[in-house]
Image (tube, rainbow, N blue to C red):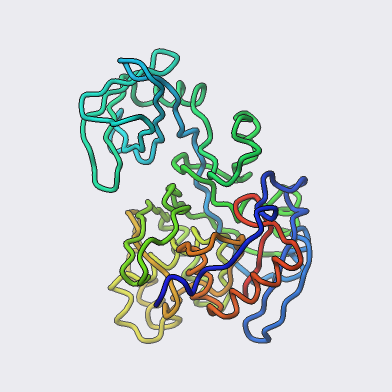
Length: 361
């Protein structure tokens, strides 16, 4: 399948630079796959499109200030973008400095220093810091900056504001270099309405990496090796989700990260031997001891993929040629996706991380 099939032209003026205020006043496009009907609304009216039996699954990963600005020991500016902690005090990073090499020493403020100790494939490096554990995170919270996507220019120099705005209200587990943006639309008041309606809410964890912003770079999308991200679902959440699915409840993933987490878990080999995923597999899982689930996911969802668990999703409008627009296309069809995007552009919806949302069902 050609990469060009997932391209579209977006006027720069429609790239949202700040979130809606309040957050739930963003626009909401609702698309029904069965009827091919589109409805235009506001996000605070989301409960209108929910049922008391629905289950909403949120990603509770928390963005951390992963961007460090400093200097090389020999002089000259340096930037480190923290991607993943490999062990205490050692991080895989992207380096913004001329010709980095093993042995290079970097100095930041508050006494934080680091040394380049290894080079990885894909232009990433291993940095070893002189602080680790709680001390490292305490310094990071003081001097680190939120790694906003490159297309958000208005808040680049407003770090304190960005730390508050680029975070969901239910963020809990520190580890994301980018926000699970579909969740940015939710307010405490909207959560209360959803709870009052009777909907079940569940939380999973996927630590979002900066690879989520990378456009697919292979002409044949089947040749693309997607970035890996760490996921975690505890056994009690799994049990409740299994019971809900077996009861015929609609599972609504809030964001593509929640989609990837759920589809990763329910795509495991041990579940594929059951042809009927809603009965035999789920009974078997109930009979066996269900354990916590965690690990890296490499799942790449594009047209042709058969969804195992997710029945509906809430998501933003994504970048052209990105793996995320391919995931949406797998769910509602590529032609439908591009037609909806074209309509949203005509109606001046706001796009990307701080933009408007869709409910696809």
